[in-house]
Image (cartoon, rainbow, N blue to C red; front, side, top):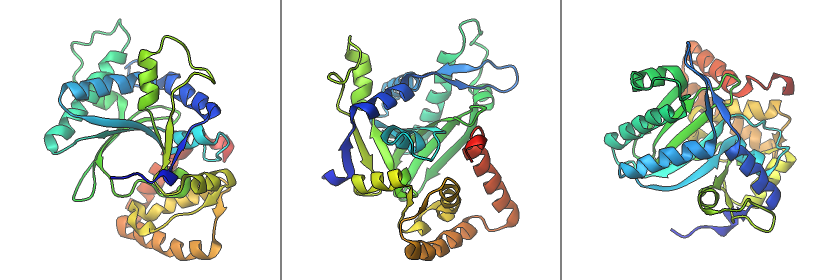
Length: 297
């Protein structure tokens, strides 16, 4: 399928440097009970998981950075706060066997990050899941085939590994629609003997899955809220919309957003129909998006 070049943009040197920091800084994955903290560089967990997927005959087409971290790379003062590290593995997931294999691979990969003094032989995948995984999600229907494994961080900076065969709706709003293709940088880490410099670094492409890259980036820089068809989003994008308002974003078109608010609310109440469910969803959202950022609210 031919790409729309308007949706793409090559990162400049400042953006490349921010991306490099994100992929090479160590993120603590906190264990429950007396399990030790895992120190994990994103570039390392990507390498380990990808290699093992290929060994198990699950083809990984490419790896991307998504979400608030991608927005931070493209515009440092995005106003969104840089929380979860969302890594997308675009892969061939044809059935339940592949989904289970991916889950097994991620849990097994965690062993690589345990301190050397730990006796790994007696640690089971179930134990690793209970100790280090905050949540697991799997969606498998006609339009969407993907799974998510979120690794716990006490300050809310979770490492989220998302394995996507197909995903119809990949964004909520234009400002969170950015994905950065990592393969060229990951290859550079593997092959280059010299460090990156302004005159010597790989060409890295960013994409807006909302549409025109420059328009979406302008929305991010000017803190404008814009979306389309929010009824396609689980929960209608309602909580993210409120989140953006709290962060000082405003509607690109007040009239259009007033109309879309009705669709957001309708979809939210369809997906979360009783008060207890609505409360759980709201509390979960606050926990995931505001813990550690209270001073910025």
